Image 1 (cartoon, one colour):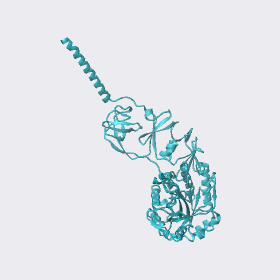
Image 2: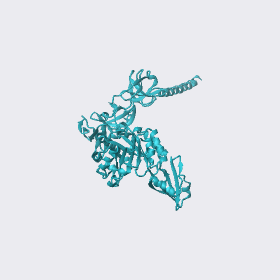
Image 3: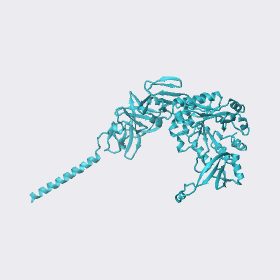
Image 4: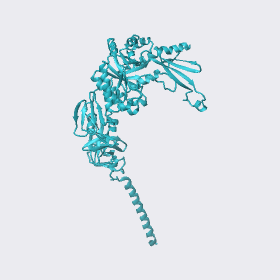
Amino acid sequence: MRKKVMPAIVAVIFVIVIGLIAVLTMVIQKYIPSNDPSDLKSYYCLKEEDDIAVVFNNTITGEVCKYWDGHVYMTYEYVHDTLNERFYWDGNENILRYTTPSDLISVNAGSNQFTVGKSPSQEAYTIVKVDADVVYLALDFVQKYTNIDFTVHENPNRLLIYDTWGSIQQADLKKDSEIREKGGIKSPVVAELEKGTTVTIIEQEESWSKVITEDGMIGYLKNKILGESREEITSHEFQEPVFTHLLKDKKINMAWHQVTSQEVNSQVANILQNTKGINVLSPTWFYLNDNNGNIQSLASSDYVNYCHQNGIEVWALISNLENDEVNTTSVLTRTSTRDYLTNQIIAAAIEYDLDGINLDFEELSVEVGDAYIQFIRELSLKCKNNGIVLSVDNYVPTSYTAFYNRREQAVFADYVVIMGYDEHYAGSEEAGSGASIGFVTKGVDDTLAEVPPEQIILGMPFYTRVWECTPKENISDSEQADENFIPYTVTSQAVGMSEAENRLTINNVEAIWSEEDGQYYGEYQIDGLTYRIWVENEASMEPRLSLMKDRGLAGASFWKLGLEKSSIWDIIIKYIN
């Protein structure tokens, strides 16, 4: 009997032992830390031998730059979009530009030489390198003009770069340990650290903390390994550029004067005698006339002299809309033609003793956005050097005009003018107000988010649109069911204040005040067509002038002289003396 029991006992013991081994193996697998090293090249997104990973403000960005001849080279796009948008690359002529408050820096691709204004200088390294379609800037050169600090480390190649400073939390390790890719003992080991090593705590979780070492190794440590955390203050010495502006010590009362021929210039005395309080006149004298940067001029010295004799400054307007054959993008994206255009404008301003330039470049595309801002930077330098005020006309802010970059405009230009009209314009599909008070208020407040109030001039309309609405025929049931369906087609005509009121009067229409629009509204029918008018007059002008005053803006401007009623000036001078 005992002989039969023993094999059974042995079998049971064997099974138990196997089970214990399995359980022990599971315990070991679960609780014993892994020593598997991290694939650091993959972890830091490195592929080529000359790649160097970008660790920006304690984050592995996935961005890779180049490490050539002992210098870090970052892509132009990364520098422009992340570090300093003031670097401008002309890919047509292979020129790098940078604008300071007083100087224009220029660098040719592949060179270690550069100019500051007209003064030559050089570095010990190539400043700009072009590799196929990719442009690289030497980070040493970028740092000359940018508030950044960086260090380079190897094995793996990594660039530790910062552009923010202040309070950080640091701690020392209580004992030897390792940082891992993720918060878990089975995660691959990024680096072995000795007791006493100082780390910066990036994120602290319940059991693990994300940390970075002084040489830019990032990973996770168990919280129990960390000593008591302490606050440290980081800082970096950098002389931020100081930009100044040619601002007036009075409210701007500006009006645009549309000049289409030299004969119109002779009417300046007559047109001004019906106004009150104007201290700036902007005649539409100049426009871009070809793709080489030449401008057409209607300027008149007699006109300027008359204005100066009457205490009125002349800020001549330059436009890009008059010549349909001109490609504004082509002109602005080439350094040579942009420089020539700038020189043409300044030469004309000096010749005619102008007090200012009013830049009115409209209908630009997103592709020319950076070049347009660079044009403003470069033009502003030459304006300041000659005591010429630079103002720039802008649409009210929208998502699709964000590339006009009003914030950067305001750094270089003296005044930013809001064209607070054309809410509904000649090409609109629907009739509506040209400048409802809600539209204008939003335009002002959105601009204030980018531009200081003392630099904002609010443009207001002297014109009214008369909308002719023609009913659509053969409207389907599905069209009628669409809440966005417009049951008519429209055309419009811009008319002066008196003309709009006359049209209502002769059609026996008594306009009704619209609180929502801040305007009087009237409509009438002729031969089956409906005519709709949102009236511009003293009543619509006053809320906008009040808005200008309440928001502390620099002043107002009006488009255009000759369309207003003479009585409008009595309202204007109540707010602009």
